[in-house]
Image (cartoon, rainbow, N blue to C red; front, side, top):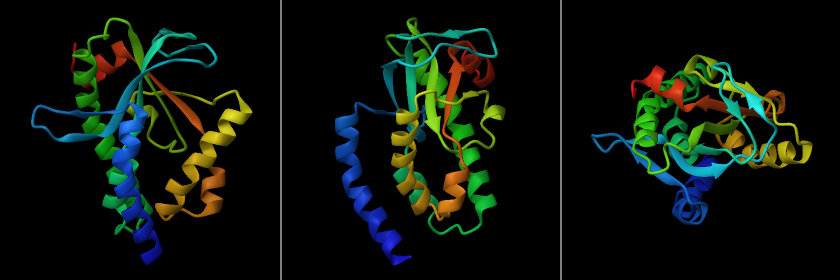
Amino acid sequence: MSLRLTILWIWKLIDPLFYLCSRLHYINNDKNNQSVFRVRITKYRGKNYTLSDGTMINQNDLLLKIHLHNVRLLNEFIKIKNDLIRTRLMYRLVLNSMPVLASYLKGHPEEAKIKGIIGITTINKGIKSLGFDCYPPENRIYKYVKKLGQLPISLLSNSSFKHFQKNRLTYLFLSKEKLYDKYGQN
């Protein structure tokens, strides 16, 4: 446990540097509470997809890329041993952050050009109930590199390596219109 805490402490020190280099932005609600997301605008470079609401995601479309603030989440979960409680807490934090995400996108200067939200994760439970469409990435090298990058997060969150191997990497897409409809920013 002390090694895990030491690694997390070092990560908390390095995270502000990563934040500066990554072009990510924190998003806050009206009460200035930070959501669990950090975001940036990106041009989509993958395979074309049609989402469940009919929105077409094509190469070079502008999307708002979401990143979970992993060091913050791991810090909150470090003392929780029960996987089910951790999963429920994670779900609640993401669910509570979705209206903040919708508000951020609504006020973004490039909102008219942005087609939706994209993320990539190995956390696959509860995603569809949040409104996301899930698709596996096609490029094997990309999948390998991304999954390798998520290994330390998985190991720090008390997951076993076997559990990590079973989880599939998944693209998450959510159209702008579905985000607004579901989370109240019409």
